[in-house]
Image 1 (spheres, one colour):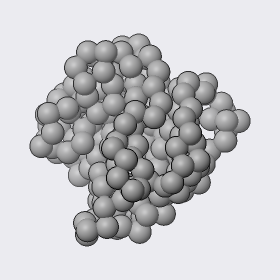
Image 2 (cartoon, one colour):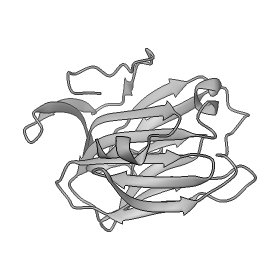
Image 3 (cartoon, rainbow, N blue to C red):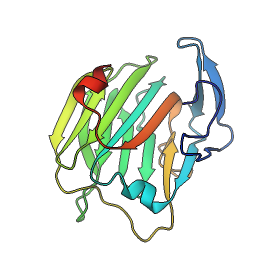
Length: 193
């Protein structure tokens, strides 16, 4: 939660702000948010077991807005766990990749508006992936088998504002107020709260 200007998560992982990432106050919500201009990301390194904990059940939650939905851009990604949120042509897509080699693909998607703050929850319970936007279920797909994880890497990374600094799909004109990744699945009732 960047609301008060801190980039350290509740487990003590310090976010790495790549220049020119800034935490700025957004007048609409009256809170601070990380601002992305297509040349920067915020990344968090995790031990492999942190990501492996979410392989069979997770909840990914974020509150963000985007000023340009035309070029494809990633809002956030969990590198080496093959989960991401991206926007293209006004459509928000949640991506995931199964263990066993199934290519990463959009498992849920929904239309969004530019310049509006949206609350997104992406859940996976080892059977179905679900996407909630502003408390409403907007996509659901059967998706058994667990997420693919890359066991050869010594660390995992969550990146806000893109896949990584070398990618050409960095978020352009977006702001992220908060994100969380947790083991277990948020219920539909919790998503509406």
